[in-house]
Length: 461
Image 1 (cartoon, rainbow, N blue to C red):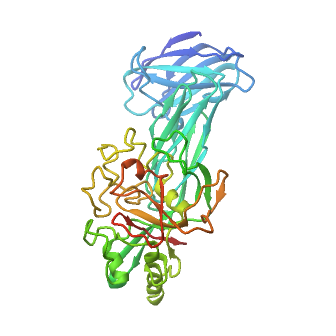
Image 2 (image 1 turned 30 degrees about the vertical axis):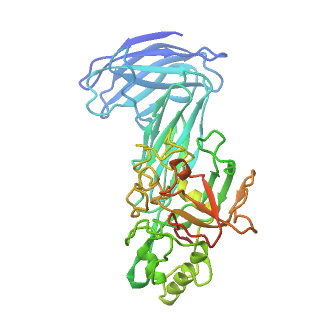
Image 3 (image 1 turned 90 degrees about the vertical axis):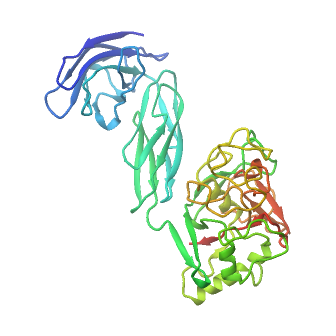
């Protein structure tokens, strides 16, 4: 390793001492010499760095800058990629008088120390693209470097994409980011890491639809984007069951999913009364309907038949398109672009009991916090798709018959074509927290009713 320091001229806006640190790969030994720094008089706050570079690899060196408030301190001033120009980033060739221009933010008047890294390491990002619904959400990608150290900075080019952690690094690590909800048309932005680009696409248009049930009762559904995800759970997931075989699933069409579980008020509006015979486990307009079988919903004369008939007779869109979700659609909606145990994270240490869990409590009704019954819908936080109670409260019927998962990738899976029992997903107020995970599967016969089983609707576009 070699280093060189050069004192900057003092200007009204910036006084700086710049130190150049050199990192080498096994095959090349880049050298930085003849460092010169000054603040230019032109522009708003431009700072110029000149240096000579030698012994870079054929593909060029990777050059980056970080800044600290003391010579020995950690980097605290991190220039955005958009603030830097010139001989910085990937592919810088050998030569004299290499130039970096930093458009320093206003108010940068304190003495700062800058470290310039020159290295022959290679860097990649994965996944390099991601799509989000109108409601936004969070994402993660991995920066992989061929060696450590290999300094880099992740920066967004859009104010609706915020890097929330891992914005700088000197080796392989994850970067997380958040995407705001989209009030307008479809849009696209990027996060750039040392010249490598992660593209973020976000849908625009109508994110929610509202259906008017008999009596003017509203039912709201949220649009869920098509895409590919891993269905099931990895072998090391806490609480995992053998039937959760992880496999890639592609859904080729967007669909709508009920924002909440169907409530007792919504059920009465369509069916005229609530079912009885399962006991009392929470009563009120905004409590989820329970004690309903699969046949009560999807069978002849059931909720779906009457709902679609009502929509047709009142001229509302979607008549004939309302249904129960497939099991794959349910998990896609529940995960909301995540692969953790729950849509909000792993809730580590909370799997086989009715004990408390501070990380899960804002999101889930389970036997540890439900007071032995259902709770009104939408009291807990929604997932990134804007859906409430996908974990817990009542278990939810799916359209599919229950059967073994395939190990290979599948597209738009309809579930087994034969069988007698139907799938239930999401866990319930009656079960341990670990049984409310995104991947957990359950099943019952189509005439089975319980005080912990309800449903939510899906609708084809």
